[in-house]
Image (cartoon, rainbow, N blue to C red; front, top):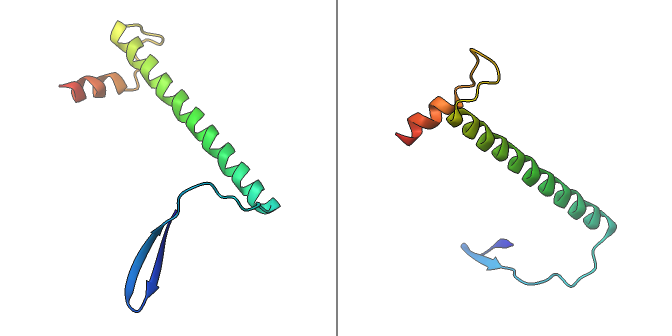
Length: 83
């Protein structure tokens, strides 16, 4: 954690490192758990989206058409991005 402290017009930055050895309150424990759960779900969701994108690009590169005359345009953008 970085904390800014101001004294006599000068700002000092303090870096706090290490394990927190004090006891957590119930509210802090609940907040910590909620943040950890949200972080895990966010990482899982982002990984799933990235996986689906990779599968879609592979499908498009192989020329597999699931629905005729429909495209999301991702493959065209990917080809254009590659050059």
